[in-house]
Amino acid sequence: MKKRIIDPNGFRIFVVDEADQMIDEEQSMGGQVLDIHRMLCKDQRKELQILFFSATWPDYVAKLAKSMVPRPNLIHVKKEDLTLTTITQTFMNVGTDDNKRNKLSELYSVMNVGQSIIFVNTRQTAFDLATFMKSSGHTVSLITGTQKGQLEVAERDKVMQEFRDLVTRVLISTDVLSRGIDVPSVTVVVNYDLPNGTEKMETYLHRIGRTGRFGKKGLAVNLASDRDRHRIDEIKRFYNCEMVELSGDVEVFWGRGRMYMVGKYCMYSDCRSLLNVD
Image 1 (tube, rainbow, N blue to C red):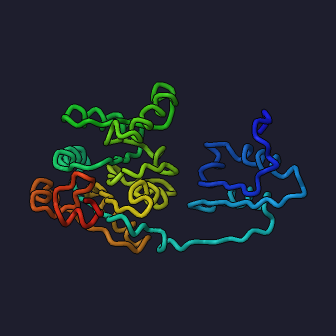
Image 2 (cartoon, rainbow, N blue to C red):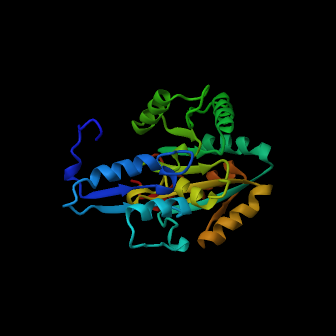
């Protein structure tokens, strides 16, 4: 707009999606949002409809929104209505934290899926887990937020495009992918680490929402150590949702056909019914 490549006079709707992430202190995009708003409002003769969508509504979002829309219409969705009905939520008790990656490797040794995303909480865990999975014979790719000495923007974009193009099928990621990324072929989300921090419940919902897109069915698998077990209960209470406990014995569990094997290569009829797979 500043370069006058786009004429702002033709716009009638201005949408700020993921508002709590777009304009937080770390992203520092609040000023840019206001600049765009001013450009769109230069023509006083037109009406501009402004829409904010946000998982949370902190004070800094409310303040900026009110500066743009003094008398807004607010629609609040009850948290009980937020859980995604197309996603089967499960958890597996893995015992100690040290046993997590072994259980993950066992899971992927028997699970044949279309595409899946494995979420972790830190960059270091992402790199360590990718190294372990590759050394265990699994083909995985990796994406994290940009940081000096880590993944640069161009490399991150390349990894993401290969995942979209089905060149890679298993992607290990930090929360850089937990919001705003739509890859319809993702059938499984694994929370290697359960989300932490002040917005952990919202982050959990955004993570598992990477599957079950556009009415398709998906599966969320949460790996919980003994010290994480109470957090599973917290999620269930917070969203008033069901979460099926999976057997810790991956081979036996899959061998009996009881686990929800997903993707177009699913070999069990009950799983095909779950995910509408031919």
